[in-house]
Image 1 (cartoon, rainbow, N blue to C red):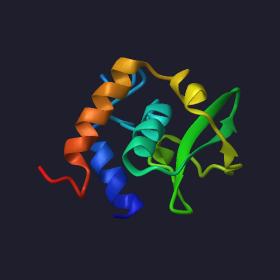
Image 2 (image 1 turned 135 degrees about the vertical axis):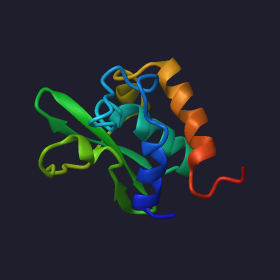
Image 3 (image 1 turned 60 degrees about the vertical axis):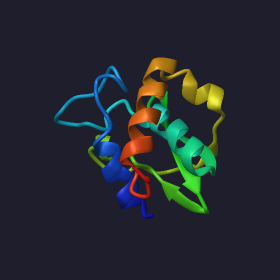
Image 4 (image 1 turned 90 degrees about the horizontal axis):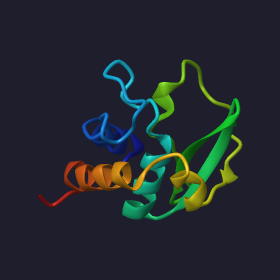
Length: 115
């Protein structure tokens, strides 16, 4: 499964229930922390972060490959620092309800799902 397949499946899952900053024009907006947590739980790997202004942008490294499914929310490419992040840091930017919703939605939508 490729990063593109993962991102496409997530795009079908993101909504106002998975991030209060979601919009139909930019579905990945505000989804970075919840998405990074869900991807780690589904595929393992590491949580990473890069500062973007005063905040952190969260993403993953899975099997040695950086996967930033929410990079599309930014108008230009990021200069990644790949700083290690903790689950507590990522959860500070989301809620349990948003996490639960995305986890359930992605479990069905992921490309290798056995529906």
